[in-house]
Image 1: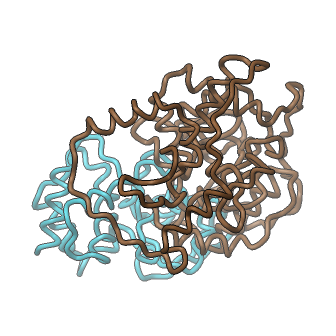
Image 2: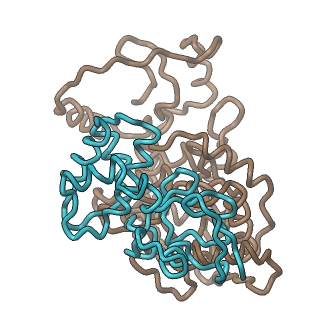
Length: 151
Length: 315
């Protein structure tokens, strides 16, 4: 079945079963490897993308449910092909150990900064809670988000 | 605690459930007082009363008490076990289960004519604890005890909404006390032990194909009908108590907000679908689950319930 999706500002037709999770389509059919497969159960946040600007687990979002809502992936945050302010802040703070969760972390943090450009530490902690990091990179992630907020 | 009057002699609103605490013994009240007074004091400004007249006029509560406060203590029922009597003392008194699980009348008093027939709490349904509760499997004493102390049972589902906090607290209570509570609560429904389970899966019933696809992609990876609850402890929805209720309130709220209370303890977990699905999709999925996994009548006005639940503050 052909389903039309709006991904990073472009319309894209994909041919897949309507129950297929958006994550699989983004990675396998569209070739966007920003969103990662972590748990596949909406528990870890590695697959986080924006749907109409809201951070969303793409592993439990079937493509039949996306409709005409706008999908933004990690790649969609680039500005003129370069890392945006938040992505650069993650690089500058070396906010990654194994790095697997980081694309989801960036997506969730970006959604926070869109609605609250200067969040408090507590607001950051609460907002980031759905995304898990098993390496314990939390303090570096915190620094990166604050660096982007202040910059 | 017994009379609903504060230190300065002011009448207290029954949002503080002294209509139940009044059943607690003096010894227990004194023990609670000693414990509370052992906690270091903090500076706290009490919020102003925002009720409108005449409810802002505290003395009218005295009238409410004449109607709805019975200070008579619970007499031991010699025909029942010691454990049942202990359970009744905890449930009717400090546990104040009826504050949510008994319906209230227009004046906010518990309807004593229909005890434990189901009530409301913070937008959620508090299901009936009497025989009018519809479930796939009947609750046994041991199942109730496990549910109350862990917040989950494999044949009934997870405690969510305000009940999640109750289970979290009871997880710290002694097993014997929780078992006594379960003994009394199970006796309220007095269903025969032989009541057969009713497991519905009306998968053949005609369903909109797009909703079935959304269910398959968003829900069925965890709620997989194979009795394999997985790391999220997700049941087949044919077992879920919430899906069998008279109103969609709890099912809608679990889908919208998920279940995260037990994340640190490794208990049941469900992601919030508030950003994943649209209001219409959540309403359609709710109806799909109701039609597929129960033999109960269809719910009405689910979309209204979704919009209402979105407005509620989340803890």
